[in-house]
Structures are given as structure tokens and as C-alpha cells.
Image 1 (cartoon, protein in one colour):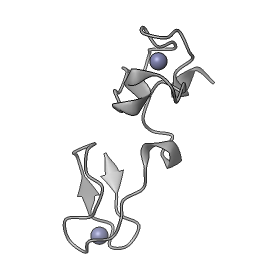
Image 2 (cartoon, helix red, strand yellow):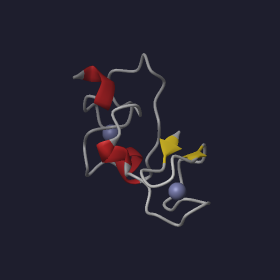
Image 3 (cartoon, helix red, strand yellow):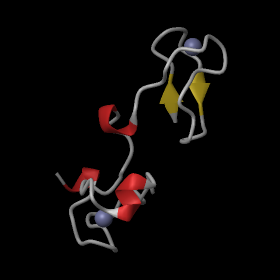
Image 4 (cartoon, protein in one colour):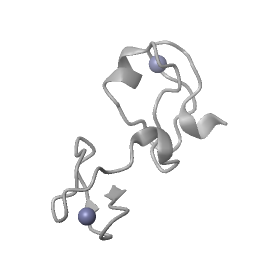
Length: 70
Ligand SMILES: [Zn+2]
Ligand SMILES: [Zn+2]
């Protein structure tokens, strides 16, 4: 879930890039510690912003630690 920094509206769609209410650009996954993604920027899962379960510690494609592994 992303929260708009402008009006506080929340978007449940991870693909959302802009706020539905005010049009402000939403924070990216890199700025949000609440999403467990692969930390390897060359990894296809990182590029596609695939979200791992909270208990996942390593990417199953490239073996890099996920965001929650730190
Ligand atoms: Zn907004
Ligand atoms: Zn990966």
C-alpha cells in the first residue's frame, strides 16, 4: 500500500505511480521500507517490483537478500 505525501490518500495498487485524488507522484518502492522486494537492481523480480511475503529473506531467482533481510 502506498500513501500519498500530498493528500494522504492511500492506493492499494502497487503499480500506482500517481495519486488518484490529487495527481501527486507517489513514493517509489525504494523509499518505502514496507515492501519486501529483491534488492538486486539487475534482477528481473526487482525490475518487475515483485513483492515477496514478509518472511522471505532471499530472492528465489537471483539469491540476493530481499529488503526485509537487512
Ligand atoms: Zn494525493
Ligand atoms: Zn532477485
